[in-house]
Length: 538
Image 1 (cartoon, rainbow, N blue to C red):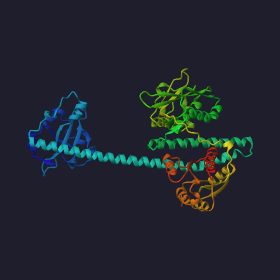
Image 2 (image 1 turned 120 degrees about the vertical axis):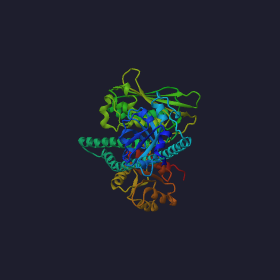
Image 3 (image 1 turned 135 degrees about the horizontal axis):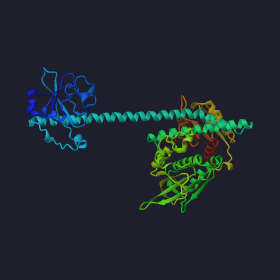
Image 4 (image 1 turned 135 degrees about the vertical axis):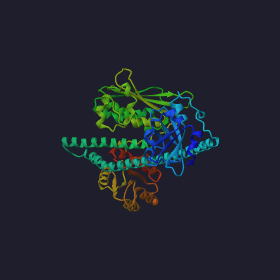
């Protein structure tokens, strides 16, 4: 700290105060008394003033230890804001003097009625004034550097915490999916076994409850990925009308259970092919239609899609609308409804059957695609009209659909199923055998490599997380075998993370199945790769 003799203070500094060794205000200059009064005399500095910096002043036993700090503080009534620096009086004294100047930026923002400037309280000694000014600037720079370091440390900590959270959610998702795969697979197999009507009803309850739990797990995992910014777009060509028909087909059964009919309206002209992220558009539309069915009062649900040209741009917008006749969404709640866990109006009765994240996820997906989403009144004034639009580029290229019709494809050959979970291994073997295929099972990566070395398989279904040798290591070794260079190897995993999926497809796997796996999904993958393999020229 700088040192100056106490008698010289009045002749040099207009504003200053003195503190004793207990941080109590011992003396105030005459000019400062005119600004703040003298009620603070005898009071602890950190208790009497509102100290903005340093924030720990009130807890420091000896304020002189903070000599290199720049003090920013305000009177209790907010009438005067100050910047202060400490000066030591002498080596023999425990008192310290704080030289003060007005905190002009605060005063200008909060007390514009006080027309203050640096010239209002000039320091008599020009050389000392310059030294104090330079000290102030250095302190501000030091303070700024400290703040930047603190900000970087806080940012690093937040990023690390977010990473830990994402890993935890992914791990829990994996651990839940593994037993859930066994429950769903067993329930699906039991559907085809002879049983009484009562037993079949119980099997149906098991299947539906498991599917509901899987939906909640999927939404929690997806929301975690959105929060961590790990989602990316996959732009492909698709037929928008066919996409709507696919959603219609998927939701028809649910609609019939609620006594609802779904109708579709296509506004022409609608192109046959456009380019956008069809998977995410499908997810959004499916979610909105599912919500409409749940909240509808027994009337129809209408799906609409139209093309909107964008002026001065090669891009166009696809607009999707889902109209229901339910209770509607109050005007005051139409923004909040897209927030996490928001329930409004009569929709609260559905809270127990959902995660509360559906519309939040939908909004995030639409915004990721550069689109907009909202809710408005229907033309009839009854119910709700949820809409979203996404930018697309129109294409003149037409691609043949890569589809396999399950009713017309006969499967033959041998499949290798690899899973360290004995229950999932046995249930998957039973599922595949019902498709007319031969099945070998391996309970470890090492066993899979051994079987693949001595057999020619049409397809290998490979679990990823296994002890000793994981699925990726086993796949790498199998690919090195001359007769297995082109065998279809499918990653069969409870990891539903999008980044993980990309990793699998870039490390030797042909495709990916996420546990739990339905009969339909399993059959589709088997047909896609086994039939394609059979159609290759000899």
